[in-house]
Amino acid sequence: MFSPEKFLEEITPQIRSVVGDSKVVAAVSGGVDSTTAAALMYRVLGNKVTPIMIDTGFLRKDEAESVKSMLKDIMPLKVVNRSQEFLGAVKGLEDAEEKRKTFRDTFYNTISIIMREENSKFLVQGTIAADWIETQGGIKTQHNVLVQLGINTERTWGFSLVEPLADLYKNEVRELARYLGLPRQISERQPFPGPGLLVRCVGKVTEDKLDVVRSANSIVEDALSELHPSQYFAAAFENEGQTDHTLSQKFKDEIFVYRTKATGVKGDVRSYGRMASFSFREDYEEIRQISKKITSLDFTRALMRVRSGKGKYTVVIRAVNTEDFMTADILEIKPDLLIQVAQRIMELNGVGEVVYDVTTKPPATIEFE
Ligand code: XMP
Image 1 (cartoon, helix red, strand yellow):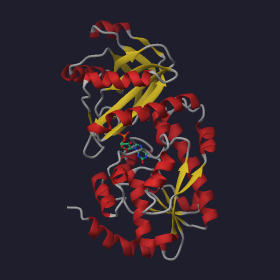
Image 2 (cartoon, helix red, strand yellow):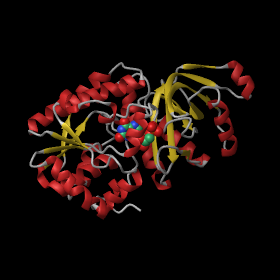
Image 3 (cartoon, rainbow, N blue to C red):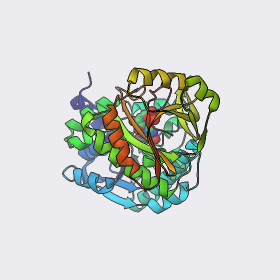
Image 4 (spheres, rainbow, N blue to C red):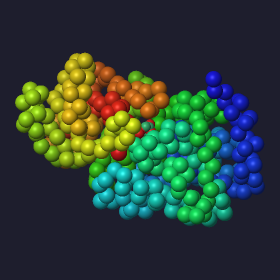
């Protein structure tokens, strides 16, 4: 059984012996892991730690300000806006891994400049066990995993990493967060990936698409929070592609195949492939069967069409339940509610279709890239 008290007792001397009298920067993304790591360091080292949130332009709606205010009684959060640099770096990139790697390089180049200004040699990150296990397994390049990939941060960027949560799992991090007195909005918050909305702006990045993702994400969070799924959000991509007539005959339904690719897991390795959609149904047993049939055909995702109209983008609603985030089940959202959420999303500029992702992990990942 994990005891946050014991963990804190054991890690405090380790942190002190590694860091000594140096100044430390803690990168906070707004997610539970990085915020807990920063709060832990702040508890141990006090104002030798500067908690910083970089506004990458891929944060959720009003994120920087709301996290800053949620943390005001715990630690002073410094928000640094670098959205133009990040948007410039990833604009036009399409491949999921290329986007993640570019984001990562921009992130560490930016943070290394900030660290020089702060005269700090140690960077605190909220890396947890699942992050490096998945990256080592080749499933994806999780943006905060460096040492485990053989990247020497000291040689590349001039700082050393401190990852106090590297052996913990999500539920243990939440326990620690509660113990450290973080507000419930943080300790019970759903996870948010380091590269933020970038991995939900599926395929080529444009500001237009990013706006749709940000607004749709906020609608989904608002509409589904009462159901307490482990993770729930929206993603978007161009609704380009074509109806597959052979498959449509086989499924006795219109099967639409999108041009955009998304990530999945197959066996223990990452897959990256096309997604396909089918018509709306109410019966989740039937929905699950169709989803299995579609993903057995080399598609990474099965998407159920909820609402359609005119507009450039397909918005995907994603809502899953999971214990450890290594596997996940879909949330069986009641049809009425699903339609209601989809209708709200359809009102956003440029949205031509809303679908519900009905793929478990595996074969899909939780995020889209
Ligand atoms: P996947 O998409 O791999 O996600 O099924 C599993 C969990 O990890 C989160 N995730 C990330 N978290 N940096 C993070 O800090 C990342 O690069 C990253 N990618 C995915 C994801 O939101 C889910 O909770």
